[in-house]
Image 1 (tube, rainbow, N blue to C red):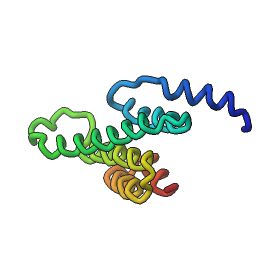
Image 2: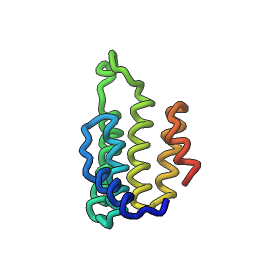
Image 3: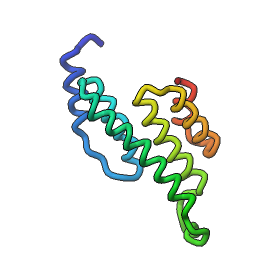
Image 4: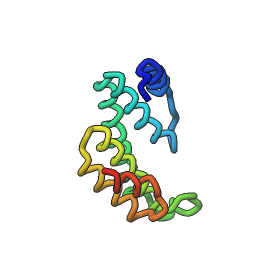
Amino acid sequence: MGDAEKAKEYYTKAASQRGGGGFMTESRFYRAMAMKKLDRDSEAQGIFDDLIKTGKDRLARDEATDFFAKFGERESPQARQASAHYLIGLGYLGKGDASSARTQFATAAKLNVSHVWARQLMNDN
């Protein structure tokens, strides 16, 4: 909106946010995007790489999960896999690899048809 000073103030606030695990993992993407706006690319790239690694680790952990350990879990295996692919997609999107991001978002949307953000980002990129 033309107020570069105010924009920098809010990018700085966003870049300084600390999140926890779980759903907060997605907030790291937005934190890294704010860092990019502040020319803190190396920090942002580290976060994008970590998002990709976290997603891949979650996929590998899902494959290694014992069948009986799944009883009582609140999220279906497909929903967990969708979330992992979504994180990987965010990492690729942040790194500027729109093609790989789109592929990950498409996989997430296929695994969980209710994943609105995966579908939206798949169509946007």
